Amino acid sequence: MTTHAVARGKAYFRLAKLDIVDYYLGVVVVWTLLAPAARFDSSALASVGVFLLGEVFVIAAMVALDDLTGYRDGSDITNYSPDDAKRKRYRKPLVAGTLDEEQVLRFAWLTAAAGAALWGAAVLLAPHRPVWTMGLIAVTYFFSLQYSWGLKLSYHGLQEFFIAALGWALVLAPYGLATGEFTGFALTQALLFGLGPLLFGVYSNTNDVEGDRRVGRPTVAALTSPRGNTIFVIAVSAAEFALILGVPALGGPWWFPLALLPTIVSRARQVWVGFGRGDILSARMLGIKIHRLTVLTLALVNLVVIA
Image 1 (spheres, rainbow, N blue to C red):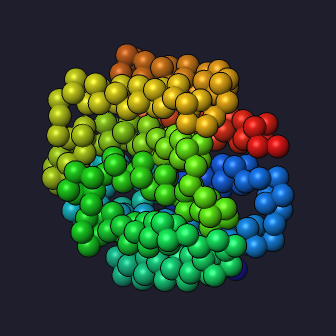
Image 2 (cartoon, rainbow, N blue to C red):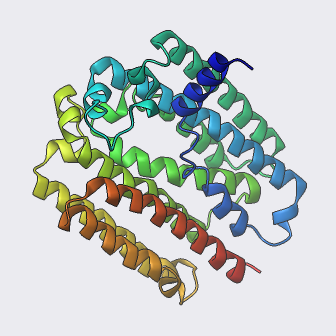
């Protein structure tokens, strides 16, 4: 393989953001939510596995279109300026010049088509096909491609909601295919899972506020004052805390809040690092670690409770 081919492959890898695995961890939560016998049922495993593969392609299309829009409107050029050592330009192939617009657009539509085909295959392989799950998959696919393209949801004040809602859907949809059920315990875990990406995304938005304001991308950070944005982030963190406390009332074990204590304490530290110490990007990185810790804890809780 030539050096040029390797470099091109790395550029597409970065375009698809394949090193950011946090949405894909939802399959861990789903698998541990299954009854012990279902965890090794061939049809359930095949459906969830193919759904996960489709998810990779759908998200690759979504982030590629997001990069293309951000490059065209100038926000990525601003946010990934050469003098900002903390924001690595090579992570944005259009900004870095390693891919051109035509290549990115072609990649987006090819991965979107592959994602649709794989999600269709996951449905066909599934042991259950409840109507609500079919609708959720269709809605998730459609709006994923509209995040920064077409309807441009993230340019109309829906960015924060979408980031969380995508996580909710990526747990509930494969869970519905595998079980045909909709339970309170599964719902609360989906909600907690979706709040994870949101609670590092809002710190990214805080860092990118000037670029987003310049192009009219209405994130909460761009629409409010620094104090208002701080209050919003604290409110979302508090909502996660309240949800954790409420899980026992929705079918979870009484000791669930104790198991999630590391998440609770770490989230308070994240707020302090970001807004007390003023280190927004370190708080963002801490948010990624907290999300992964939460997923691990949820998995362990499920393996104990659903045995």
